[in-house]
Image (cartoon, rainbow, N blue to C red; front, side, top):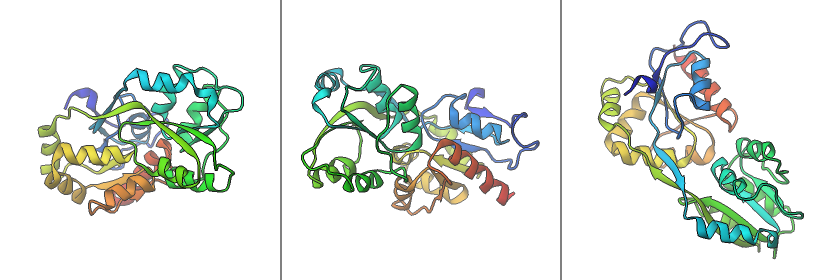
Length: 267
């Protein structure tokens, strides 16, 4: 693991001492100065970057064709900041009359920063909560555009169709496995060197298990605490026999703070 992937505690804005000698693994796709890593280090924690997946551009034609017809839709639904980026790079402002729904505070925040008004944001940052929020609205016959990941779960599209909406799901970006230094990761696991592992999406759970192999993935989470950003991610871990600690809020800040308090309690 390179120096850029391993960072110690930083002074200024965080605790005066590191609360746990063992580092925290960040599995989301971000650089060493990414938002989650930066917040963890600001709290006095050491960080290891194990990006379990990478985000790549989707084929341009299907998304651009859908966006050319964006004025024909009643709603557009965003489930991640990556989908927001893919759309707003091509459409700077939504057409008049188009309503916007967002899953999670981070997604909604990026939309607002780019000048998009969010009409619907469920209190819980998961797909099922979004469908439940739509159920309280007259959506039968509404046309919904859903720019999604290549590995998007069917919850949103299926749920909205069951409510009577017409849903066009189009691939906005691709989620792919990242090239981890698996042998280095396994070295940390073998010596029980990890304090906690943060998961900010179900994709991170799926891809990390695939990269490490089932045996080493289970060994990792037997020795380290798993911290999940929300219920969908926690459910993906539970499906693999691991009970995760849920972030106090479904944001990167909530994920960092919960990880810090968890390790502080163990120290």
